Amino acid sequence: MSATRTAVVTGASSGIGAATARALAGDGWTVVCAARRVDRIRELASEIDGVAAELDVTDPTSVRAFVDDVPQEVSLLVNNAGGAFGQEPVAEADLGQWERMYATNVIGATRVTQALLPRLIANTGQIVFVTSTAADGPYEGGAGYCGAKAAERMVAGAMRLELVDQPVRVHDVAPGMVRTEEFALTRYDGDAERAAKVYEGVAEPLVAEDVAETIRWIASLPRHVDIDRLTVRPRAQAAQHKVSRQG
Image 1 (tube, rainbow, N blue to C red):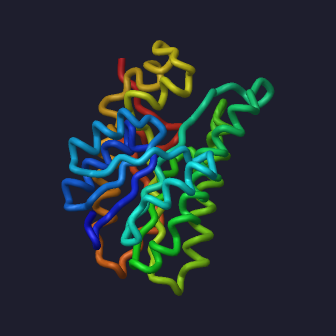
Image 2: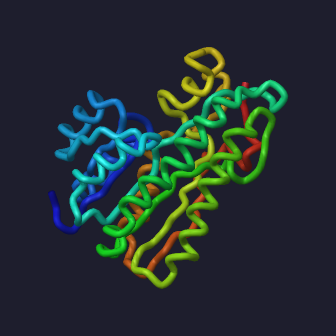
């Protein structure tokens, strides 16, 4: 592996994670593609001349084994693993799904960050948290996901303060409406009809490659430049609650 340009991307088996791995590899990074679905990341790693590494961010044993295999020279961590599960009102919410969202988006991202932080500091590295505009405020049916992403944002913000005297940068990339092959489908438990309605009538929602390009750009900036938070939305989405739907 490269001694100076090694990146770890969690949740790299699909969507924004896979697109980010490809974008970074195209920019000269050696990418460790990390995810639970080993078959997918092996295929991706082969495609981009990277490394496939099994990782379940919710499992401390998995994280320890993963970190043991990551090179000491890693200088970029992209915390992308996460997801949304369910969209019921609070009165009907499945709290097990809330716990799952918190375990992946907040605790999982923090667990991986803690484990790799000494190496990232030693290598004047960067940490990117892929949060969401859901962290900006609540919407109906979004309490669990909004809360999880807001908590993840607070982790990034606190670390930015805590590490201000250390040679490591912390970034929060907050995508708005992004159409990927799995995000909405996972949220609605495989209901393709409900998933399609999320994007119905929206001219050109973002795609995974748009967010990946943002992360690639951030990773390419000089060491003294820190992008604290960057919101990325499609033109058709003026705010979390304001979307232009045609037809």
